[in-house]
Length: 335
Ligand code: NAI
Ligand code: MG
Image (cartoon, rainbow, N blue to C red; front, top):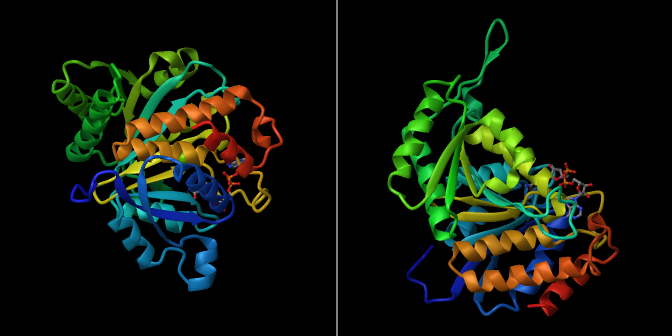
């Protein structure tokens, strides 16, 4: 965040992308405009349409816009998603992937009282594509665990817990089998924990955690884990609270932060006003908290909760028949 800017005025990079990315972005900005914050939006192009037009799905100009902003709102890309969103995460060194698992009413959630955050390391682990190699017998993939990157993500998780009034952090690993790499993760987890004596700690093996997420999801507050485990557990978490239309995410880095719904460009419904804007809106709420606008975030969140509780104005994915903008209007009216 650029602290030299005057208070409550933020420069936000807006990258709507393709398909429903554009629709859910429009709906989200429509509500953000009603908040008591001064946003300066700078639009960037990226995705399939941008690639067809400019010959590059992620122009350097868009990267600069994201770099220079306090935060970025990203809609969705289509077929070029890997060249766009994965590249932005790498370029901006976005090391923390945040996936909240929180129940909202009138969604397809399996539980009505789940509320925890998954903090996933996003730069190393098993997902180092250029470290895979073919061999005579098949292939080998390396799993890289460094003290520096794991300490950074674990500290991020504890700090997140502290700042968001969470009382417990759970470290997830497989140190019984991956003795050296996850042994290191576990050691660093407890080293960092000492800096946060007020926060309770526990650690579980990843396989047991996969089960506990189903049998006792209410017991979790903040989970911190390595790249692959975090990828899998966060999709399991999405399944617990139901429906791509309501699942947000954040990517936090040294050079910037990007907030995006987990869903893609949904070509099957694009251009029809059927997309649920709530995943994008919850991503914007994560952005508000990131820039320190907690009160406005609470207000926005309460308005979404009210509309979901009423259950009258919902998009088709939640069993209603309202349009993207009708949902946005209802939420705006409840602010
Ligand atoms: P998708 O998330 O776009 O759609 C999956 C299903 O969920 C579709 O039936 C869609 O209609 C529905 N859906 C998704 N978001 C919705 C919303 N907000 N409201 C109502 N229904 C919603 O995933 P899919 O179909 O696998 O991929 C479509 C395109 O999106 C592909 O080109 C893919 O590469 C891209 N994609 C991009 C991502 C990104 O930009 N981060 C992430 C995932 C996919
Ligand atoms: Mg995934």
